[in-house]
Image (cartoon, helix red, strand yellow):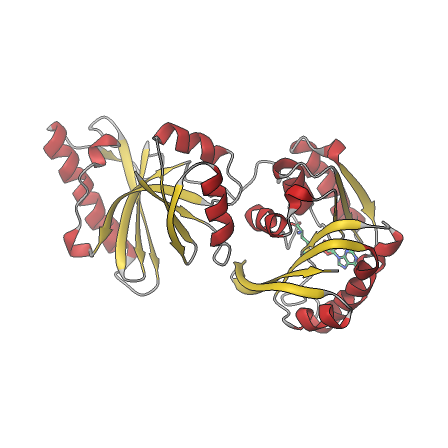
Length: 330
Ligand SMILES: C[S@@+](CC[C@H](N)C(=O)[O-])C[C@H]1O[C@@H](n2cnc3c(N)ncnc32)[C@H](O)[C@@H]1O
């Protein structure tokens, strides 16, 4: 059974590793999609409920040109007593989504009617089965969604939102790239609503986690979220300036953070001044890796001039922006 998993563009390798850790055979990935061979539907649904880097998943039934559309096998998922809806999406240039949805819907009805002698009903609001149709650059992919319609990056614990919150799937990826499984003390000194610290407690069992922010209001939000995630006792919280982390802790082997970008709010110049103070301070306490996400490319140069060694730099799609993810070492 071929399945397609969607994830953050630029972080496909992290998703590939998670799928491989479930025992799936990864077939390849590109542009926010990872393909793998999955075993049973039940196991896939169980895994998805606990997944960390996946947004959505669908079992692939057809891949090819729109004219050759053939949904044989759809009868395993949709019967005459089930309702279904087609959700169509277009990635890149191609036919309009409503047109794709109409053609795929007609094919589902035809196949089910041919097989069972009666057609299924369409329910666009509360369908029992969601058929996903995506035009992906140059071809159509149609499948059946597993794991629900809501993107899995929406975590239950995010009851308190931050205006500039990070997707938990990106937080997970940053932790994975920083080697959180081996970390003994993690610090997020600009933690906002606590996403990175909470993902670290839930997904990596880091023994010591410290979460700080200059704004008390955000620390209160992060504490509430940590209660909902049932990890409050695993995280220490503090109101503190990231430009002076050396006064908060005397060491950390992993620092993962999402500083202000100064792009939509504030100014990039002010943000870079903060980065400079932060890099100089973190350099004094870091014994392992620093992972940071920002659209400000100058951050790499600032890291280097502060004595940090940039070991990886990649582009990641985050909140409608391509941003840089840096991994640096002391
Ligand atoms: C992009 S947000 C972090 C969002 C967080 N990752 C989340 O998911 O909620 C950046 C945070 O940096 C904090 N910040 C700004 N200047 C700071 C400073 N000098 N020291 C510590 N935190 C600071 C802001 O209060 C804000 O919460």
